Length: 305
Image (tube, rainbow, N blue to C red; front, side, top):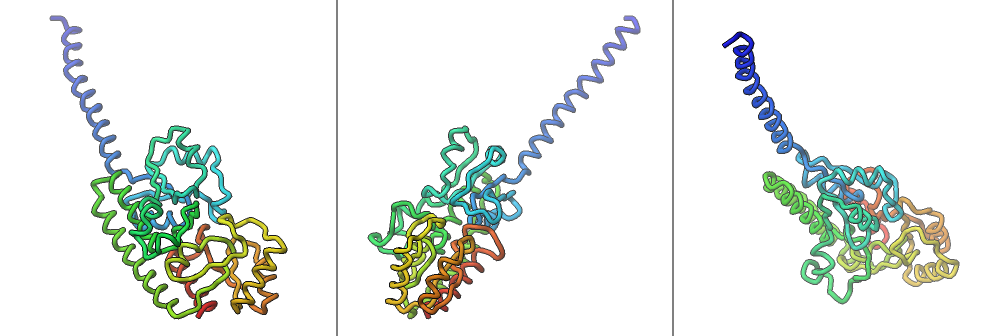
């Protein structure tokens, strides 16, 4: 056997194991990376983003879809937003038609999981809530998150979705959800106790607090009788609201963060009252879901108690 043949044989003996080692190592690194990567989660708007953060904590990479300060009723995704969503594992939505862009996402063959947090709320309201079945509206009011009883169901839906997508961390997600739901229980009890014995009627800016009002035995009247917050009231509407406020002896008219306060101020001036903010929590800002809901409670107490 000549030297060239011997060298070739030695090279084969050395190189093949090295190639196998490199291939095996690459597969192992990729496998390890896949298992250690966090769930990529995008939530459609502020409350759901906070719910996702409380459930997933450091085990998920949670992002907010609608930019800070933007009203989600008006928002439409850009191509860049769609590309971002395509890379996510889960997209958390409110449901009930609140995210009118979801159908476009399906049309683009999104491969992740869309988590509709309204599941188990609208369909089974009479089982999940103290609200009588005949008193709630199934025509498309999306503001379920403003009722802490429903918010608990949304949180649990998120925890179940995370658990299904990442079974190894199921216990972690479920425990986090249980802890946060306990906080929502305390919020629910606080609202229920502190509004009991108070007056029932209040004037909100737009039709956002129906589920909240029904849960706590209140009656919502509105400046704008729409689920959309940017409609313009007519002169006749303003006259009717002023008459209603005088009839009910109301001295506080509520506005919202993104609404022009001039409309509510006109009504307040006519009744010799003032305006306060009653937040639908649709845009991100200072504070948490619980702190913002507590602020709403304090303003309602000022108006009703």
